[in-house]
Image 1 (cartoon, rainbow, N blue to C red):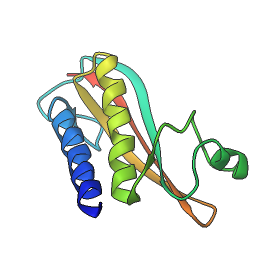
Image 2: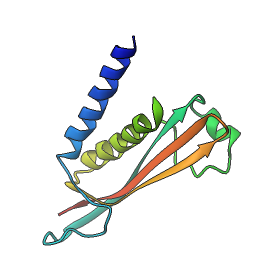
Image 3: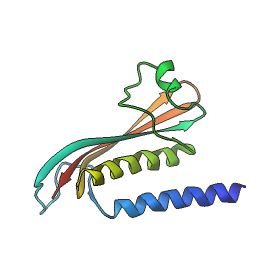
Length: 126
């Protein structure tokens, strides 16, 4: 059983890495030698690592800066990070972006059993 879970996790990570290769990505605000042609929109994704699931997290912790429905609960911090990043990549692609700038990760402890991972960036064309 452990092996199947590990194989699924590796497949999920590889899927996100493949999606990342379709976009230029930076934590900065520019690409050297590649001017930004159009700023499209901010994009964000959220995922939860831990034992708490779904909307109850928001209800239990109204101080958590939360931008919408929690899309996914992931296995561990790495799983949550990749799940949130995948949401950002999917949204950017749907908007027609070919790059992301200002990629940022935020981590928020939720109660004693959860960690909310939020990823944000600005979708652009270069």
